[in-house]
Length: 530
Image 1 (cartoon, rainbow, N blue to C red):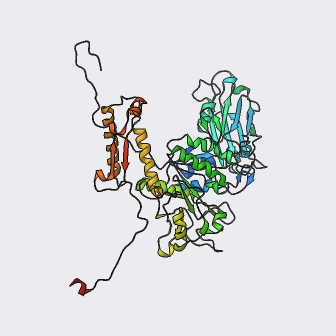
Image 2 (image 1 turned 135 degrees about the horizontal axis):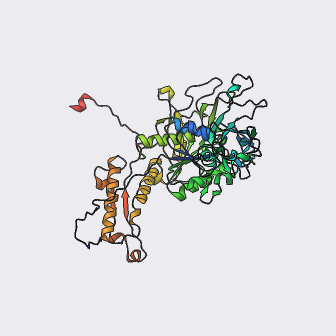
Image 3 (image 1 turned 180 degrees about the vertical axis):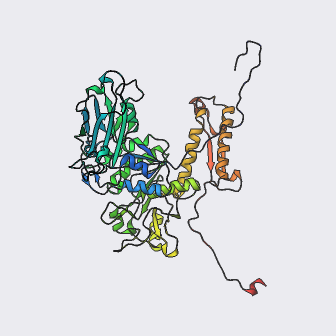
């Protein structure tokens, strides 16, 4: 209570009504996989173009293995289908090495491990402006030039205006130009701060002043970058990079905002499915989107099953055909992981997490048959085949083009054999409600465990669930049919009080999808009416 010791007017702010509980986001997605380049700590991207700026484009190499990498296609599919926020965790072999260059007093390191860093050229020149004082206080200009396919043999500086007419000039894939940099740490244009905050290619460390830079006004390249060995499960699981940050799936685990997660390249390394699902089941705040491998689709479809019995994941087939302008064919079949994650996000944003991510058009794929029997889907499955797969928890992408309904996701099952949790939207609705209540009632920790606190909790949760019900996420004509909240002496024992436990009992009636829409029609005669 405030103390009033002197006469005067005092104003107090008091809280009335329940403490509001805000619903958590359910559309933020995390993906892990190999990329062309970029940092290994998870990074948020909000568009395909931003992904390209940080991680490059399509790639056919993972560590020392020459193979088609599916993460870039998944990212493109995610944004094509309505996804908005994606955290990308770049996977590299544990023995991968980042390229470096020592240009005393500047030490440059590629932004992430891999041989790609050997294709970064640096040029240090006089700045456009010159600082007054001694030569060692002069400013400088740093240019970073990256060629995805290697630095040209007859290199012509693309930053030099005089080279515009040179037939050997090749436009780089990435060019970064930082002018008027200073090596003085107290300056606002301190090179280490400016470059490290903006560069998509390197980080730098300044150990002295630019007056001592070797070979000033000449070019150089980063060297000794190494792709490392072939990718394995430990690489996907991740490692500690800084005292508080991790790479791979471990890095995504630490990000609470993630609600959907996938590893598109699991089809190349099925053993990754275990750590992926384990994270979802342990964290209980995210849901895994998984795809069948090529071998599984080429085998006996009737015997196909999800890789694991879990309520925290969904399993899909077949693969989808997308544009691939960098390949000779111009198209390629890829796992639908990213496209489906984008559909999850789109449905959450447009309808709500209670709506099943099914009967939705798959965008960003080739929607017509190509020459050589190259159809939009790796398999064209019919109703009879889905009758076998659906009860097992295998969701199918179906071709409804003959009916004018395009290509659609035609399944809403989790990988669980438990009938209570067989629908994706039910599991994800519970995740949404559980996480929202968890975050919205943190104020109650260390509050007195008595009637006033219980009443505040009941009011807050009831108000939140009432909003959820009114938004159509809970079944029931009345509030009492939709949910109940109980927090009083009947939900706790004396042992709970003695051990500091406050227990609140909540029951909800989730809406379930109309998976089987049945119309019973009979003939009616005039005589029957009479």
